[in-house]
Amino acid sequence: MKILAIAASNSLQSINKKLLTHVATLLAPLDVELIDINQYEVPIYGIDKEIEKGIPSEILELSQKIKNSDFLIFSLAEHNGSYTAAFKNIFDWLSRVPDTKGFHNCKTLLLATSPGSRGASTVLEIARDRFPRNDASVIGALSVPSFNENFDLEKGIINPDIKKALNDLLHKIK
Image 1 (cartoon, rainbow, N blue to C red):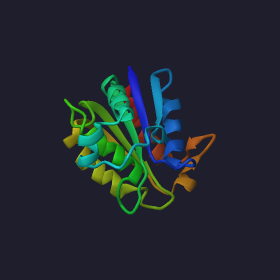
Image 2: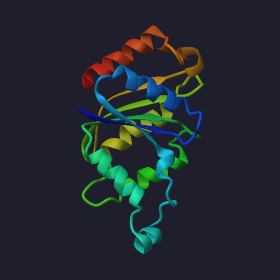
Image 3: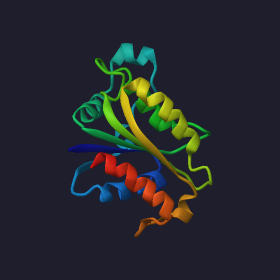
């Protein structure tokens, strides 16, 4: 089974990347590829740019990786109640790739975290509604609130209720 794990943040110190890296360790020995969206920095989407230059090669490469995956895991950072600008731009470009609406009908797990008590739950709600419209088969979602209190770099998730909820979701993948 091939799993593609995408942290939807371009921050070098992203807590969503930390969460996703931890989740990848929990899925061993499955084949998990962690994607850094900084590798997919492309021009801001616009129809004029698409007509003039086509879809960027980086986006076509990412789309092919998604297509070749059995499962997607996203960890969504929240900026002003929505996706990060960096991820939204990639998402917009992916939706323009021919023969897909973006996610190639992959089974998908959505995660989100933030330092605050809502745990990026707003962006998680947006994604739960939007991703199926872009060919993602969402099998579950989990918000990790108060990241700094509920996560340890060595131990991972330390809140027993959140840890159990995550393990229950990961069981659906395994």
